[in-house]
Image (cartoon, rainbow, N blue to C red; front, side, top):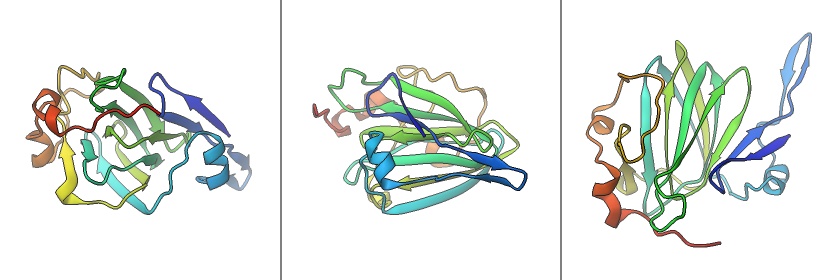
Length: 185
């Protein structure tokens, strides 16, 4: 199992060991001790599963009062997945990590608390699973415009399918006072 650093400390790409034979494959999708050794020291308390069609963009989402670390993976199809550092004062503020995750590569991405997260489906459909380090709290949820020019994410689809909430999300600059402060480790 490989735990790969990204351009933003704390955001980790996971490449699990996949054991294949004539019957199919087997992999560990999570092992607390191995993930802790790989730099992911979160305690996950909620699992979520979504299914979306081609061009669906979910995000950019985060929670303020109950920030969530997320370990995400695709079990059907393919997505372009993004983690954006929105911690005020962080040396990587407004920078992002973007990776393609697919059912065929089995890779995972860990997004720590203090980051906004989103993805867009690049296959006909995708099933997306994520483990969360805190419970979903709609009163704490915050959305950021997917097309914010300050962040400038190079989404692979120009006209995504959005929820009404995501289509109306404000830009990062409008949310500065609400964003969490960066705390050096």
